[in-house]
Image (tube, rainbow, N blue to C red; front, top):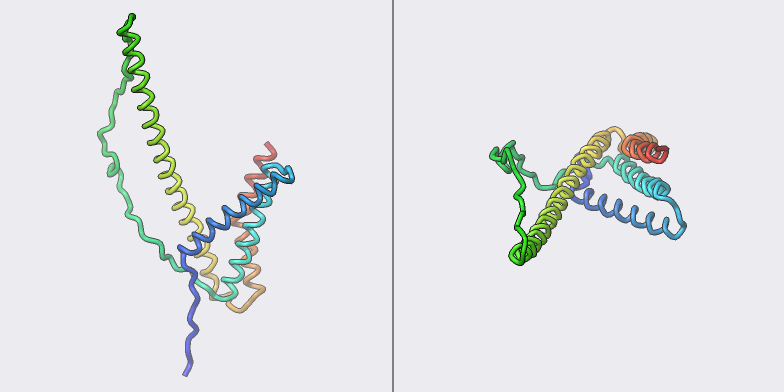
Length: 194
C-alpha cells in the first residue's frame, strides 16, 4: 500500500508576522550598529537589505527543497465600493470664516476666546491626522502583505519541481531574491548618485 507524502504548508499569517519582525530587527540592528561605526544611511540600507536578502534566500531555498506550499490564513476583508465611505455630498464652495472682532476690551477678550478655540481645534485636527496616519499605515501593511504573499506564493508554486533538488532550489532562490530585492538596491544606488 502506497502512502502519499503530506505536503508542508507555511501559514500566510505566520510568514507575515515573522517578516515584519525580521525586517524591523534587521533595520534596527543595522541602524544602531551603524551609529557606533559612523556609517552613512546608504551603507546601513545596503547592510539591512543584504541581511534581509540572505534570510529570504535561505527561507526560499528551504521551502523549495522541502516542497513546501503557502496557505493564506489571514481573514478576508470586505471590499468597499466607490461612494460608500463618505458619499457624494462634499461641499463645493467652502470659505474660511473671518475673525474681525473689532477694537477695545471686547475685541481683546473675543480674540483670546478664538485663540483658545483654534488651539482646541488644532489639537483635535492633530488627533484626527494621527488616526489617519495609523489607518494609512495599516493599509500599507496590508498592501505589503498582499505583494509579499503573492510573491512567495509564486516562488512556492515551483516547489513541486524542486523538491529534493538542492541545485534547482538554490537557482530559483537566487533568481527570486535578485528580482525581489534588486530593484530596492537600484533605488538606493540611484538615490545615492543624485
